Image (tube, rainbow, N blue to C red; front, side, top):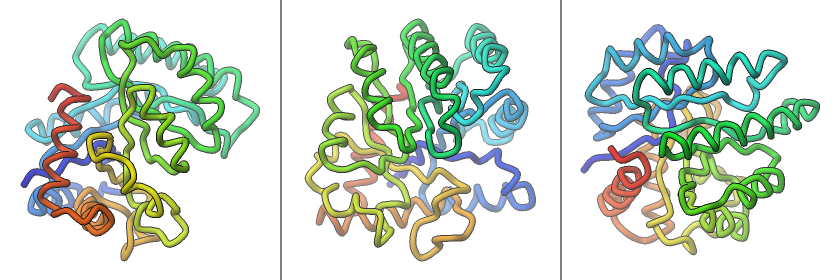
Length: 255
């Protein structure tokens, strides 16, 4: 059984003291594929080092996270574009809109999101979407940009059933993580109405640890708790869910 964590920030300084041991715990738990989203240029060196240290297991994305869309966003987008010209990445991500932390940057967040969607089309790569308190705004952009060549993952999906169906209609898989194990997460109430062909697993480590680790540092080994919960909700074996979701990740990332 191979389990895929489609979204994990393994370069985070939260892992600086035990990164090798943390990675080994995940590998021992059959998590063998780690997809690494970008945030901004300040993390690029750490991402490249992670790939160098774990070349068999780690696959990098490139992109500008919406909370890093600030006054210098055009320089940051140039950084993204320069790296895309010079080496391969598995996706453009994580990109999108975040209205939880700062609503004042909405206009430039939308601009950066659209720009990076067009980079994804240019390089024939999937996108990995970050959406926080911004479903309407994200969907409006996707509606405008939705030709058949756009596809990817709606990372850390926390919407309702109708929003799930709408995300899927834009060729997006739903990234399901620790929230599915939360009592107030709500997605556990409907997720089994979504065909498993639309689902991928993720942790978003070091954030959003699943039960029973909620409130602690998350790590990729804990994706097994997401797997357990989905097995219970879908009433199918963990092995089957691991196989389907890993195949789904291969379809998205081409790896």
